[in-house]
Length: 293
Length: 227
Image (cartoon, rainbow over all chains, first blue to last red; front, side, top):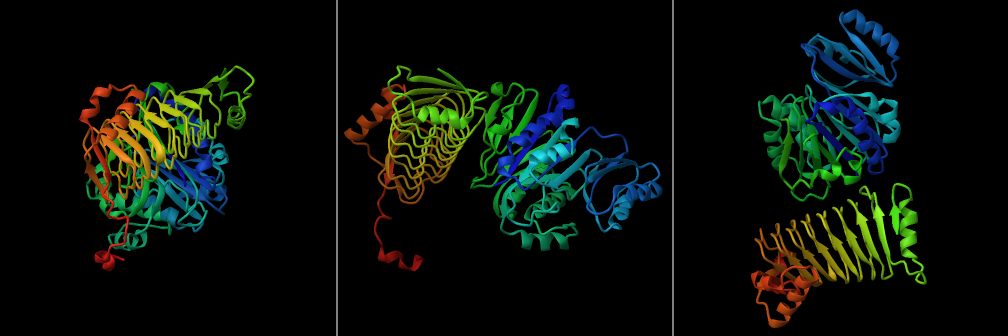
């Protein structure tokens, strides 16, 4: 089943509450996906700074922090549960190689703006574990997973990020992901897991790296991605949603002058400010909607 | 009588409404703070009136018998699914599969519905004042679907003996669905449904009617290579 949520804040007044708003959205979608949960938070970029979100599975964070501080001089490291976020002006070409040297470290996302956290467990526990309520930012995307296509692991949890400041969450399943994975790998896209959604994320990265917009990439994806899906995809600038032509997988959008919220079901947004005055609609099958992009 | 879903559990509210004390004179109820919860007012059996003040989730008023239910908001998937009788009136939009498999009663939707409205309907009357999504009236067996707006792809695919009345554009017809000529009986049915939904009866002449071409009813030897 899976639950997906996204919120894009148009009014700066709400930036400080981003984490709080997303927490309730995810809690209300816990019944749709009790296996694991994850979220991506976008906050205004700091000049020339990169953030690397890393999940450490066996490594203790202290020894890793020491090594990182040695190798990257200006690294500021924040540890939350089994994740750490490294903030530095060092370029991805350098940092990604350092992280790769550690076997038990998993890069879950990086960029100027994005931070990603994901973990196995009930979404209500996961958001507490990462103190999601404390986060602020401009937009955010979340996922609650009921596993189908691959195992219940952090690797199999969403959001997937296969490019700078990109992320994707998915409700559904893809049927041509093995073929597409081979094609994308040949084109140089890095895909780590056996999960179908990561392939779709790789597909989007491939489109964006070829100077296509997110909207254009998703429109092309309607032809190339076979299966059932509602996707919410995020970039530094905003987010987009698309449903396949058959549209078995649900989605509702609520838009006010202050925000755009997307969720699998309305109950995920019943708590949002002035939602009863919002324009509420279901995205049409096979159409791409985007905000800020 | 007010039932507040912020204070009472959904299970308690539904159980209370399903077992209303018929000796009491209280037959009118209002549910507040529905907040998109699922299965609100499912399985009601008695002639009571319930107003839901806000947006409801999946399977709202499912299996309804006798009750008149008004929703002052939108509803999720499967509103009035499998209902037997009574009236369900949605003041906003409905999601997929509105009135699915329903045997009787009336479902009125003031806004639009998304895909598969009236899928496998078995006798219900559905009146949609807006438009319906793709695959509406799929395998519809009996009853009437009135659409005052447009219809998406594959309207009435594999339809049996249900009737579809529509004013707007049909994006495409499904297999074995064709336009039919309205006879006096059909016009009478349409007029009474328009009246029920508070729509001017005189607009009946703007409607076109669709139904089954009945070509899928029997095995056709010419199609043997298709199997």
